[in-house]
Length: 383
Image (cartoon, rainbow, N blue to C red; front, top):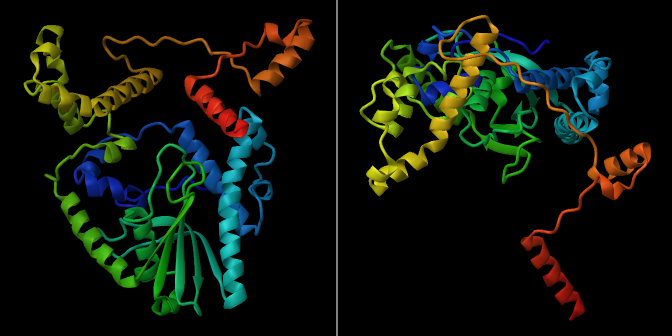
């Protein structure tokens, strides 16, 4: 797919990670990349189709799929029509935003320019050419003296805010200050930069499309912060600082020594490594004071996530033919699933096998909350 592009060491998509964990770039340089996930593959697919749709002036996802030449495979990629419709709806939201904005600018100024998947290279003294990345979408109007930098997020699990987002700041700074900026001399006219995140599949209190307008001066300040942070990261002694955000998508998350130490500290400060954990050494919950119990409970999610990552890493090693002592690869039987609405499934299946739908479809009693709501509604209407 056209979206599978190599990342630079300090690319915009990695900026949150190395700002929070300065030692991450050094550790990742010694760590092989993790296998791609189905979520990442779907994200690449969505970005590729969106890119084809914008370049082809498509107005909806179905047209964009054809423009990307994926119309023959897209139906087989998704297991059911609901997932496919959700996929298309997300791309439609991005297309609608872009074309509506361009239409408004052209009506008022007549000079809207569209940039799709353009490589921008913020000038960094500490690591030249190592902070470049590909910006999803940008729109520029010379007469409006304004630039829109747009990042499409297909993921549904992790919601990203636009305010304080280093990734989109880095794209915007690249557009403004890259000596080879695609804006050319027009960059000198820009007074306002609106950074936009489009993320239709994840809930955010500010909506699916979030905007923040800034100035070239604020982006110049970010460039200075970026340069200083990269200089810290280049130090061989740069510290590893584990945490939920920086560890979530890190290829070294399951082998990071600092993350292991942080997880062990939650259980018992005296453990130096995971090898020290044995049943006799584990502290009894009854022996701990309430402060210690509260501390462990607050870090429960971090510890669970670390163990989950260890399990996934072991699985990938086993699938690659690596024997991990104390583990065994067991092939699980695929689970069979029903598709479609429950009542509709029951009606069709009952007609097929010659029984009543009620014999297949069990109706559940309302929850107490639903019942209270019905009682309240009926009381209002009766009055």
